[in-house]
Image (cartoon, rainbow, N blue to C red; front, side, top):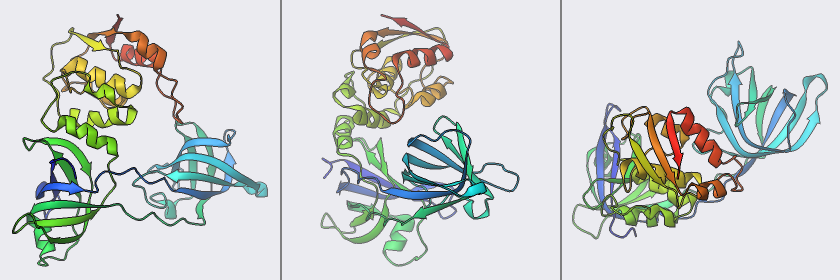
Length: 360
């Protein structure tokens, strides 16, 4: 159960233009679980011609189908990739077999692959690694079973009610689930459930319990949501008790809490005592600008967007970074596949965005 947190299920209207409320649910069960191990798949890059030396550990890869004139199309991503074998094809390059995780919410093959005349392969920095003629999954792996959760005591309306009661058999479109705070406002985005079953709820006449398939929320999200259930926190640094994953989830509820833009030239004070990772920097920056529970970007690109206006501060401004030595000592040393931002990376980023940093 979710400690009394209520939920709202939203979907599209009949014209697929506007969102409408499909259900209000009193509780949920099975929503939180450790995510399943990612499925590692094997792909053969046929007729590969290298533009740069391929290391054994490739990390994050970007695949783009190329159409008739060589123009790239929509990107398709592989994560944690490594080379298993490379077999020569004479003048036609090599057949390179890689093992990788296909990024979430992607089709089995790149969009437009059937009409492509070839593919490009790049790394996470956009460096071109090579081109290949065709892509094939070797020994396809079964998809893991969907995660099952239940939405309890739901007051159902609109197209969802029509479907549940058999009056409309059209497939339901886009939908998403919101966790609500005690006042009924948005607490956090909870996922994209697919309703697979329903039964009358023992919680009251006319209510339904809905069985859904959806990606689970990590258990740490439940701990974060409890701190936000009563509304925006008034105590700073509540996020500091969490690791990187919990801090990232903290920024979800924080997103809706931003103030009106103050005039340029203001000074903000960042409490750096708990800035031991990039997520901690983002939490502390949000609170420096907008107070406890405040938000000023969920990644550095998000901070750059926030600096364009509408998130509480107008550049140029001054940021006094207290206890900066914590970040200097901690950032950029986590053992991650991606290169984590260092203290100097963050300083250079802020300087480039016309934020004067004073180290205190």
